[in-house]
View 1 (tube, rainbow, N blue to C red):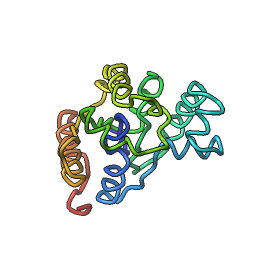
View 2 (cartoon, rainbow, N blue to C red):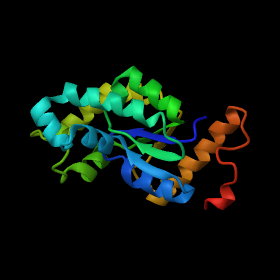
View 3 (cartoon, rainbow, N blue to C red):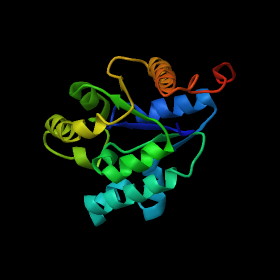
View 4 (cartoon, rainbow, N blue to C red):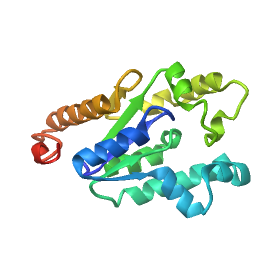
Length: 186
């Protein structure tokens, strides 16, 4: 298992807030692949979509996955569509276990509807778009090592479930537990 934790999942499932809290609890660093993309492109995500298109954004996303493989002791949050390229999943799997945060469409809508920086939801019916995108991505999200439904959990509850699931995963893979000494990190 890599020394990082990789968070996958649809927008609005809690990757950023959970990732930051998980990193704090573990004394890891937090990084978001979108921030890597913004740095590479020297422009915001909405601007990349508007000026260069989604295919260019997806190419930058692939480059970002190549960067995170080099990291150690990071919680890596990813963009919701990063899973649509198998190469991205392969790179991310090399970085660490894949944890998919999930939520039901109505909860995702409630969490995201007021955000103006989500280009894929700039549509007359964002809830329908959420459902369509989830349908397109479900098979890819299913490739994660761990799945946590965040719909009705607090951030702390999600963090606890992630840590417990990673410990179970480590034991399944013949390791004692995910962290060498969990008592030092909590």
